[in-house]
Image (cartoon, rainbow, N blue to C red; front, side, top):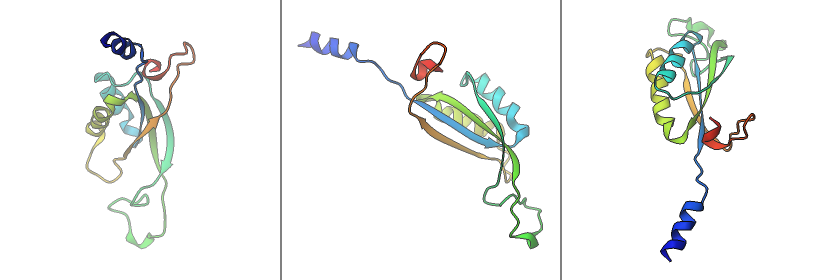
Length: 131
C-alpha cells in the first residue's frame, strides 16, 4: 500500500503557477525598477509599453488650478509587465514599491493577474520552466 502511494505521489506532474505583475509608473522610474528587480534576481525578462492615462486626480497635480475641474489630462506613463513565479509575487511588488515610491501623487499602480499558461516558443517549455 505504501509503495502504491509513493508511486502515485512521485509520478504526478507538479504544476507551479505563474503570475503577471503589471505596474504603471512614471517614465523616468523605469531604470530604477529594472535595476532593482535584476538585483533581486526576480526578473528574467519584461515587456515595457509607453502609455498615457490618469488616476483619481484626473491628471491634475496638487498645484493645478481648481477652476478647470472638468478637464482630464492624460499623462505619459510606462507600463511594465513581468512574469514571475507564484511565490515571488509579494517580493516583486515590494521591490517595485521600494524603488519608485516618492509619496507624491502619480507614483503609479501595481496589478497582479493570474497567467493561466506560459510557454517558451523556442523550446516548448511550459509554466515556470518557460520563464
